[in-house]
Amino acid sequence: MEANMSVEEVVSQIAELVQKEGQPLGKKQVKKSNPELMKNALYYFPNWEDAMKKASDRNLQ
Image (cartoon, rainbow, N blue to C red; front, side):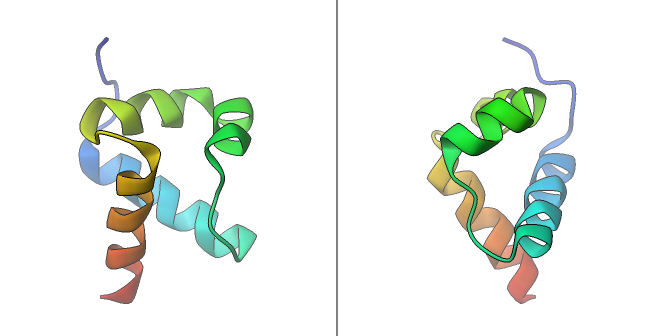
């Protein structure tokens, strides 16, 4: 499996989606609506929850 996004792009897109939705994103929801983002997130992070945590940490800065 290869990533076609950088880790910063992945985190940025997740953070934008969270802000737009106003709530944490479920793995199934993202896998269905944005499979490319999910694939790239799982390339860089061991699981979706870790990717979400990194994105939420970014939003707090």
